[in-house]
Image (cartoon, rainbow, N blue to C red):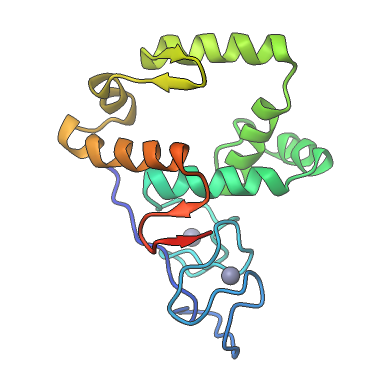
Length: 173
Ligand SMILES: [Zn+2]
Ligand SMILES: [Zn+2]
C-alpha cells in the first residue's frame, strides 16, 4: 500500500513562510486546514505547491475532495492546455481534476457510457441517485485489504451524503 501523508495546516509550512494571521489564499486561520484547492496549500512531502507537484501523497479521501474542488475551478482552456502536455492527466492533482472536468462536461450519452463502464469495473449498481459499491470490490480496485478500505469508503460515503462537510475538523469547507 502506498504511504499517504497528512495535509499541512496553515502556518506549518516548511518552505514558504507566510506572515499573516490567516491564509491569503483561502482564509484558513493558523493551524487550520486550507480549503481544498487553495493555491497556497503546501505538499506534505516536498513543501511545493500541492496542486501542481508530482508527489501526490494524500489519502484517497483527501485526493477525492481536492480533485473535485479543483475541477470546479478549471476552465475549458486550462483543461485543453493540460491535455496537450500530459498523456494520461494523472501526474498532479490539477491534472486529475482536469480529467474529472472532462468527465463532468461530457455529453449526456458519453456520460452514460462512462458510468456503465465504471460500474462494470467496480461492480457497482445504481439506485436512483445513489451508487452502491460492494466493499470487497472497492477494496480490490483500491489495492487494499477490506479492513483498510472500510474506513476510506465510509469517509467517501459521508462526503457524498454531506458534501462540503469536513469530518476531520467538523467545519464547513
Ligand atoms: Zn489556504
Ligand atoms: Zn510534492
